[in-house]
Image (tube, rainbow, N blue to C red; front, side, top):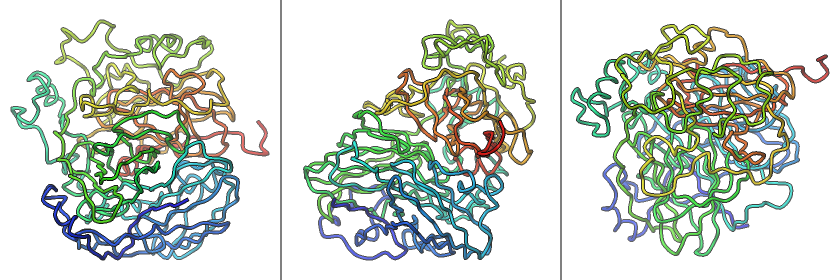
Length: 608
């Protein structure tokens, strides 16, 4: 197969032709091509039974400016690792840093000792030492790998991984491009974190004014309510264009990475959000995209024009471009910046770069005060009242036998929000949860709703179809369709002003009790977002089903976005014994404490 997979090395060179120069006036100032393009290079690819990875300090150049980086085999992103389902692989990692490092194989089902999380599944790779990962490949699809040590992921320690199926691929395509989305800053990541701790909204340059002139979408009463609670409806991304340049395959918008195709080809785009802190709205204006897979799992095809990709999620699309250039747009969720690249039949061709769209603001539903699509049975009625017709319902479950770890949140009765006195709303009502609401929790969502059918913050009225979790139907039905025997509610909690993040009000550093599961237990997890930020939650070592109403064909994923003021129900078969990380994949949220341990027992050879 003719595969043209572009990527960045640390050296840049070359020039586009006159056609590219002639189009430069169409670009916004921040996206103009100061280097006039790059000589296209093949993406370095590593394959075979044994792969050697060299982790080292280096320099990374963006728009002519160089900064300190951590590279793997000298490149950012790291080399594409291409393997085949069913093979056994040895990955020898040499750490030449003066500090510990690690590699987590994101989404791969591996023995927990090979999962790569220091302090949970192994000690880490010590400075100036070598560690060998070895495991069988039990799956296929689009995945990636990254450091799980400190904040190394922010400075370049990440790369793509593709596992080809052992048999025929159900997705037909003629060519593919791996597209790695990421964010780069010349600020040291610990400096970014320190500034966020000093002032949670430090990088937000789009704050509301006293009179709310920046937000015509909110009423005066709603703006006053946000102000009373010290919450800013424009605080959607912790780190914005004030610190970040957004990259595609290591290239800035000005550098314009270009992927080639031949007209008439079916092109597979394997999109990986490897950003530390940026949720992306991904689209290709004028080119419909057929969704075919997510997180490595094949799905029934759905034609869409945009998707919101959470940190650490992967999406595969098929496109059929005509004989023209197209702009790839990956806009940050707060629309303060975008990554930009080009699909074209020939080098030197470019397409118009659209301007950044009007930035979104949060609303009452994002504060957990919405009523649309609510699973009313979950409102204050305990574990036994979750049956119903919504995707969050558990039809046919013996609810009387369910042991619930924490009560479902109570709230207002059905009937809408009209006439509700928001000024008297207690946003820290401890009666709704069974954990202490300390200074690290500034809000408990009064009425969280199932938002799996929502396209994502800011994409409600874009005028075209946006992929949602409700659209996802797995191509091959799930093997385990047992009804869960219990439900555990897990609250995603935080204090945005203090930049404190936690799960069920506790940070990992506080050594909270792990979430415990019996081996092969079937359990429903309800992730309830009590904060006003979208959290991409990743469970190591497992896939879970998003409960979206599609029965045995509900989509399996390893990472899921949980919208503010919403909940997501996940059905989990705890079939991987060991200790596993469960965390928000916003790097600074995880670093601040939004991470817990999941324990599955018994281990192999251990008595039940």
